[in-house]
Length: 64
Image 1 (tube, rainbow, N blue to C red):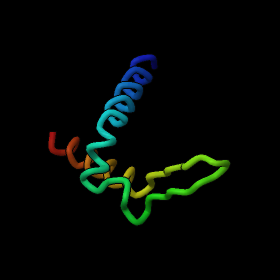
Image 2: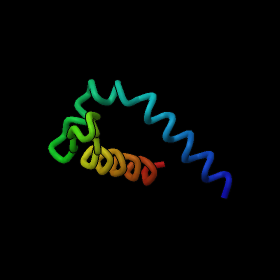
Image 3: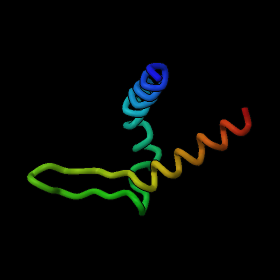
């Protein structure tokens, strides 16, 4: 079980590292991505981007 935590942590680190690059490519600005201000802070919920990246990862895993 600890192995899964390590894998998930590493994936999240890689995604946060690649976030600026993905935003330049247009991810994060898709129609299903939510941005709003609440309590003086900007919140971002990337629903469409998450679904699209999950689909790409699934297709990649099927090919490998």
